[in-house]
Image 1 (cartoon, rainbow, N blue to C red):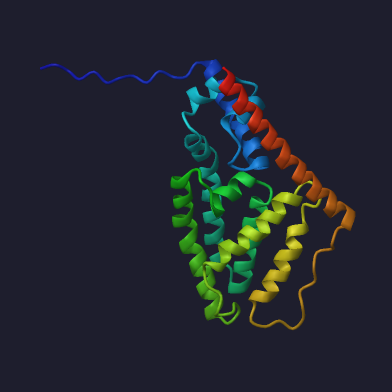
Image 2: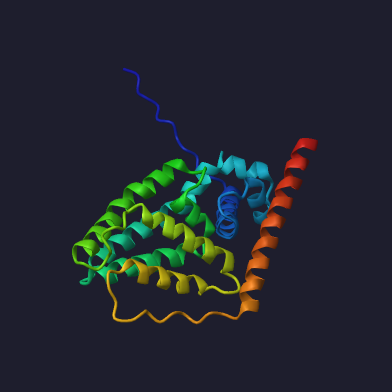
Length: 237
């Protein structure tokens, strides 16, 4: 009786392993700074390897995004579950929003996965299925306990999250805590009653905020110019 031959999976060569690690590190930097609209060409430039090397390790962006952000989604889901353990339901909800936003405001790629993106649909669905039920429980409990206004619906939260994280990503380099000021204002609008307004984070001077917005605008223009140049290079090859 013939025996089945089990195909052996050859381990990656040392240089291939190094390249994979370089690509993952470069992708983490590029996606965090520019979001998931960044191209594999940009990641190759950051990693210092040819774009063909990137495609050999990661055949498309979906695979690379999944490799990078699966752990980030796990962390957010764990945070939501931990928040439910809080004795006070309002404090638990607030803590989760603060912790989730602190991560998204410093990582545009994670924000894109959580909020919405044309990439990594499977990972986005996974994020929704893991984080959504826990967030639903946090909202339901805070409303049941009389803290969260009852006319707020679950779909309000990703919209609020998008608004705050957009600001955080734009101002992260020069005014990294500015988003907290506006989250506080938003939370005061969500709670049913409060003896007095919550003290706000100090507003950075107007010049600093203006500089942060200008820097973000220049960065977007540079990314667009780089993308156009890479596309022109590919067409000329």
